Every structure is written in C-alpha cells, then in structure tokens.
Length: 307
Image (tube, helix red, strand yellow):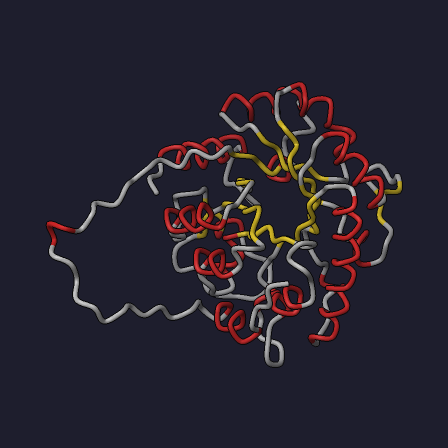
C-alpha cells in the first residue's frame, strides 16, 4: 500500500497544497513549445439519481432521451436497479457503476424501494452479470458518523472487507465523498482515516468535485494527490462565492451545471486524465428545471471544453 501522510491530506482538505516553482530562468520565448490543446473526449455517464423526480413518469422515454444527448454510461442505484435495468439496457446505456445502499456496509442490512432485502453478495453477482465495473459506497448517514478518528478507522475495516469481496469477483469498489469527510478531527480528517486505513487495491475513490470544493479543497489538486485512488469522478459545478462548509444541506441554487459555476473544470479534467480516471459521471443533486435539460447543458459543455 502506498502510504499517504495524514498531514498531507489534512493540508489538502484545508485548501490544497502550496506549489512552488523552481528558480531557474525561463527559456527564450522562441524555444518554448506551444501547449497541445485538445477537446475532452472521454465517454460520459449520468448518475440516475439526477432523474429521480421525473424517471417514474416515463422511464423508457427518459432513459432514451439521456442516450440521445450522447451519454453512453449510467451510474445506477442498487435500490431500484432491478426495476429500471431492462430499460437502461434497451436505451443502449452501459451500467458501469452502482451505488450500493450504504447500510449494507455500516450494518449489513438494507432494503430496496419496494421493501425487499438487498445484499452485498447480490450486488456483486449482478455486477458480474452486467459487467458493472464498480460498486460504490455512496453516503454515510449522519447517524452513522462518529465524533473521533477511531470511528472512521473502524469504518475503514468494513470498507476493506467489502473491497475484498468485490475484488474476489473481479469487481472494483469505491467510496464516494461528501463534505463532512474533510472536517479536521484531531490531527487528521475522516477522509485521511479512510484512506490510511484501506489498501488502494481494495478501495478506490469516486471523487465528487462539488463537495470537495464546498469543503474548501481544490478538486484538481486532490485528484493529483490521490491519483492511485481516484477512478471515478462526479462532475457538477458550484455557484460562485458559495461559502465553505463541512455538512451537506446545500440549497438548490448552490448546484450548477458543469461549466456554469466556479470550479475550474479544465484543470479538473487535466488532473483526471493524468490520474487515469476511468469513469466520468455527471450528477446534478438539484436542478432549477427539467433535469434532462441540466444533463444536456453539462454534456454540451464537456464536449466543447479544451484541456
């Protein structure tokens, strides 16, 4: 395991590392190579949570609209995947990541939207059948969050156990962050405890750039710092001047379509490319209008942005 210094990650969580340039004199302008600029061209996926307010009305039509925009991947929810699976596949969307019900990790028991029991073993079996690359621990409920680092060290053990099960089946396992993981706690942060307490071969990160930024950190710098971990990213933008916080509860107006807020997405996408990110997932927690329109706006930006 490549060890990461807790102090390094804490510094990152408090606003990013300070980078210094070397003191050598610049080369003459005529000898400086012009940077190669390219359009971002990786496949894009959409987190179906974005569509929760409309998908039940016409799931087949909504999913085909998503594919018509140009999305080729879908990040699905374990709680309703069985219901929407045939329509996801019929729309030509590849389910590449699944958000687990988080209670399966914290307590070992959870139910789907219809009250039927779920299991980690069942999710792994489904992932193997449908070529889902990653199962993701998406959220830690407030009642499951501790007040000291020992709590997160214990959670790291549970994440490692889930990662071992996934790895045995050839499935990746990842943890998705929000903002609370960046709050200083003792001499580190919850995120540092989770990273230090797990093997990068067993637990990757699905880095949500919005929540990283809300917590006051630099998403591009953190992706570079955790290049061996970040294999999936959630792409969404943040309203300018939105204040730093370590909790969720952001109002709807805090969320913006990719490219229409304050996050430096060219820098984020360059860092993702350098780190070897595999799956780029657009998510909009809250949308001002039709979520399909929001996903279209983000897609159009990502297809035009130069990195």
